[in-house]
Image (cartoon, rainbow, N blue to C red; front, side, top):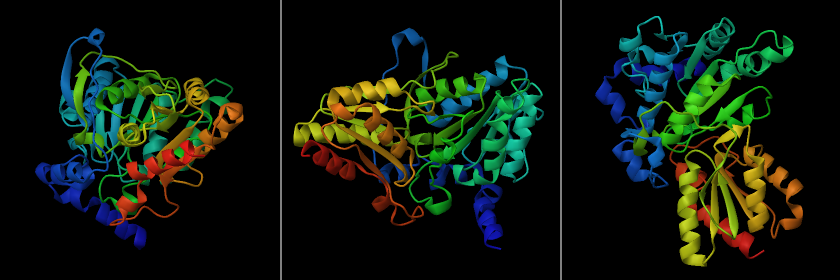
Length: 378
């Protein structure tokens, strides 16, 4: 009964609402209210002049643009999921159904296990499957299909078959007041699964390039999209078809004293933390966007920590078993003699994601700043 009620509440707005109502929803990410209450400030990045013509896009528009390019250039590509035919509750597939037809952009039943299983079958049959899981919180019914079937298909067939042309998109992370069923960050659940690739973008330009890389990668990929950035993140994005590499981290801000590692939304929190540390403590922080969880860029991380001697990893997922634990262990195994202080983790708490207490749950800039004080005074 509880599960049925939850599903009913989950779909009350998409079924009954019109486009303007959906656009005003806080779960849609990046509305005026969510920007005002956000725990970070998005700073657009200047595009590389060599990238050519650009256009102003939100993160959701860049995701739409990436799928548009994939559908245009690959006649086997299909997009499917709950409500995607009319544009989706987040509006990421707006116009794709009209442009490419109902045989290539279509709705599925409310069954995440079925969506993943169907995507695996399409990919094995030779199609490029782009599946949408409406919220990452609801990806768990598909867990077995993803980790036991998709990730292992090539291995168990001795490389005779694979579903490498499968990409699963899912909205991810805190959004303002999404509470326990619309705010989770489940990347670490999948990070222990050989055969998968996992990417989480921080900006519109990164989202477009990384999504196209996932769609064209010959391994099944999970692409988590920070929904709070859907409309609040706006920048100039190259209009051309381009890919960004998986497994290559970005040094967003160079620094000398402390390495700060995050991904997705948390990168913007760490940018503010780095500025605060410089102004208030005179500490130079190097901010690194991990970009992809699997594979992750060991060289960039280790080289930074060897240089700074101090490291803080921060993510919204709970402290225990979060991917920050893997990073901390690897750093201490490989950089131990260079460390001036133990690696610190600033994460969500080991509780269900709260509703009105979200500001106390999130690893905000003040908690991260305290961690900087701790490692510099160690």
